Length: 238
Image (cartoon, rainbow, N blue to C red; front, top):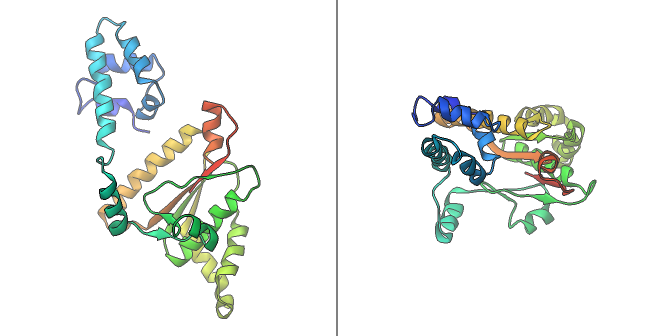
């Protein structure tokens, strides 16, 4: 996770007094900051003798976060960008691809929602297998509930291969599994830490033109968010 202290050298307003204020509210990282209500933080800051500096620090952190977002785009720009730069990835299920307008759209979030044992994980495993095989791409599978199954991937590989290629199944399965990396995560902070490390890795790969990641699957996001927000929703985000 990115610590607030790491911002101090570049942004003087984020000084030791600001760190102490944030620490008093259990805020030590940018992720902690995002999980807090900004208006509540501002209200607490206004009660301090150095309220002006603290509010400037809050504004500075928000500005840093905003600068990391892509620029706002209107509908026409989004459509043009999608047509020129984004590809559609098949899930391996023709009917589901039809419902999704061709498949999973790169750069977009697709959420699968349904009751337990309705097949969400199977869709994720099939999509991971299909993309790793047909696109020869990398897939990151974030497993929050011990749902990842290499045996099921082997089953999907068996369905994908032509009868004439059955003898090469072991080698094909080995290649696909090397393209699918599974990470076990059991709380929201572990997920944020993983995403941060993944972001750093991708930035390095982009610089060397060696980025092959095409799909990020979180199965399931609800098991991480429900303890914080409450409720009983079940969803998976590939």
